[in-house]
Image 1 (tube, rainbow, N blue to C red):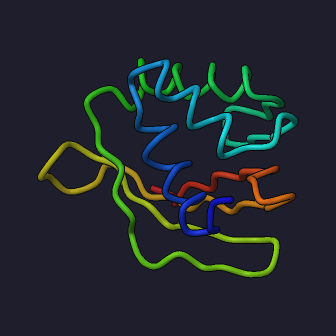
Image 2: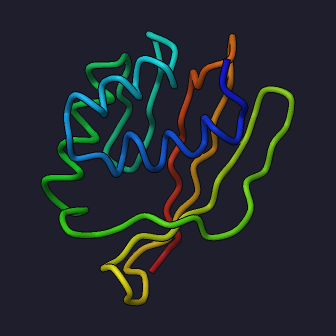
Length: 119
């Protein structure tokens, strides 16, 4: 079973940064419950396939060529955690910042809420 910190890292780097569909799918299976709900400004997506499709859409579109980095420490509670992040071109200032607030159930992420900083 993964630690909460490992789940946060997997969500950011092995799913939403991973361009290889096979590696991303393996990370999805070990990181999220099958009925995971992903909520971002584009909507609400339920299940592994919907989450994978949204990650691919982001990687092909607005995140193409950009790199995620942690933007501070992760915050961990008994069934909730959060990880602030920034995204931008490698070695350049970020173009966007946000935070993922997650709910943990049975050792996996069951809800991922992505909040974006204004501006």
